[in-house]
Length: 65
Image (cartoon, helix red, strand yellow):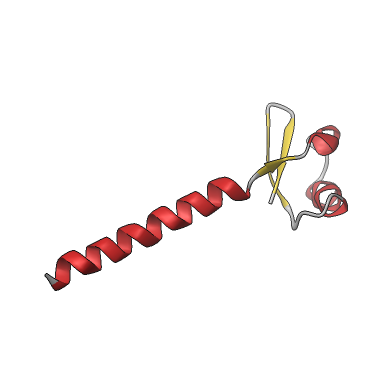
């Protein structure tokens, strides 16, 4: 019984982590133009739009966290 509950807790936390990671990425179209620039400029654009940092640029689309 104890092993089952431990596994359930681990699975729950893994799912919670994945869910929050997926929800935290926000597309910021205003920052699309800086996708090809240096990291400092990407971070600056995301911060100007009230996000902590940039996550990725995919297909010329900026995602901030």
